[in-house]
Amino acid sequence: MRQTVGLRARVIQTRKVRAGTAVGYGHRAMVDRETTLATISLGYADGWPRNAGAAAFYRGQPVPFVGRVSMDSIVLDMTGCTNLPLEGDFVDLLCSGQNVDDIACAAGTIGYEILSRLGRRFHRNYVGPDGAGQ
Image (cartoon, rainbow, N blue to C red; front, top):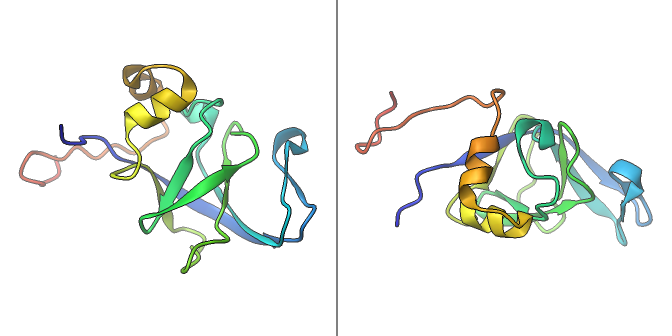
């Protein structure tokens, strides 16, 4: 089957932090080395499952979540990236590297629930079979 849905989120800030820095709600995660973090504008208020420990993809390279999914944001570990994102760049969450069923499995649910939870704050771009927008 061919993937029909993509989801992207904008990078709203990047920071380099020292080893021992606590990250996220309740300081749930702690980095063990100097780490480059990026915060993206996507969270559980947008319908992303709080319990889906997943990754995003920047230029095709997976970048793991750090800490908890927050209401309006997710923090990513960009340390291994060869090209770091700038504020305003996009990362992919549903893409060829990770589909809706992958996220559903990580969240302990089904793909339909993931899709039906995605909220109104997303800009939707409908593309026909010929690739043209509608």
